[in-house]
Length: 132
Image (tube, rainbow, N blue to C red; front, side, top):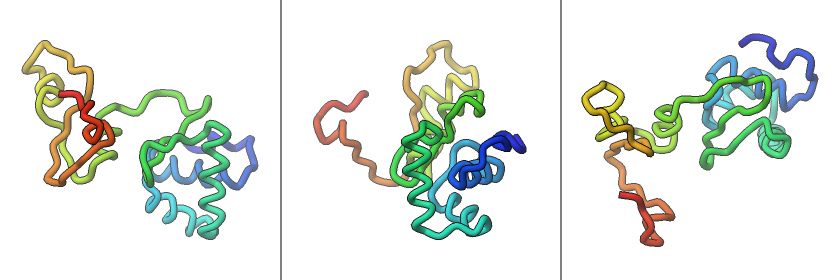
């Protein structure tokens, strides 16, 4: 994936390129800060870069502190399992999702199921609209 942004000279895109090369298209704020420190960025520049990249459509915020690189030069999809385990850490793919992955069922779940030892309350659960 080297030099995918070589024709663009924006500092924000340079930071995104470095993050994608080191961590892949799905990364955390901690990972981005690590890369930013190596690239000579300050905290304020990191926050500005995140805002700029999101506004330009190059970055999607999956949840606070978890980002997904986007854009025409980043072809391909990130596996839903990677996104699911990035949303809740620690976690493991479980239930029907795991059964389908290993070929133990012919059912294809519409959502990825994960298990975690943490107590997780989603906004849908608070509104009584959680999927079961």
